[in-house]
Length: 312
Ligand SMILES: Nc1nc2c(c(=O)[nH]1)N[C@H]1C(S)=C(S)[C@@H](COP(=O)(O)O)O[C@H]1N2
Ligand SMILES: [Mo]
Image (cartoon, rainbow, N blue to C red; front, top):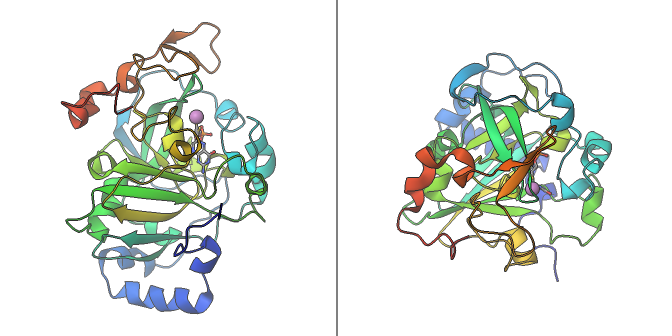
């Protein structure tokens, strides 16, 4: 099976300097997104560097945060290996600057946007979210990021945009896990447009007030707290607006196990294990898993009238 569908842009093709500069000039005429680019000085991008001007948000969960050490050493990021400690061990070499995110498909303002431009798009906020992995563990993570809706608004989706596809970098020279066929690379995830626009959905660029460590998806990753962790694609290089539900990596790998929605739901078990309970990393005893990971009051209306056993 080909690694890339024909017509795909290889991440390595996004940044040829000539095209990049040309697009950048184009963007500077486009307004909102370009305004930040003209400000110049890029923030220091190194993992662990303090992020300036982070606002407190209204979305701060009042639960004990998972220690920094656990958040950054117990990870799923198959591009760097399938073991929990592999990402921390192997992601150090990922080059997160320069970095661009291509915005494509059904949008009025497609383009290749520089990460430092995206960082200035909206004020950075702290969001303390409960995160639940489909494997049955959870964490409470203080993310730093901005609402995905801020980006979506600026790129102006057309009336045909019903879904949003997120694609992770494909570069086996930097991501040694991609030399293995454990998944069909690049990693692809997707959301319905209204899920993508929801105020809880963010693009994260940091955690614990600092630049995101590579193992957590630097320089920019999705965070969707009411869905299983695998929906939150890391190290994103492409966001595509489409009419049909994207074929996600996990649906491709095991369609009977992973549906498109993947909302946290204690009443819908994974075919191979129960989802009723979870172990918060650091705890000894398991706790009950909450419907929509506890975010039901905010998100349940997105799924009104849907059979959640069928649309799992
Ligand atoms: N590109 C990519 N994104 C990914 C994954 C992955 O393997 N590759 N794993 C997912 C899974 S299963 C989880 S639980 C979360 C883990 O995020 P964290 O390590 O920052 O806690 O990332 C998700 N995003
Ligand atoms: Mo996960």
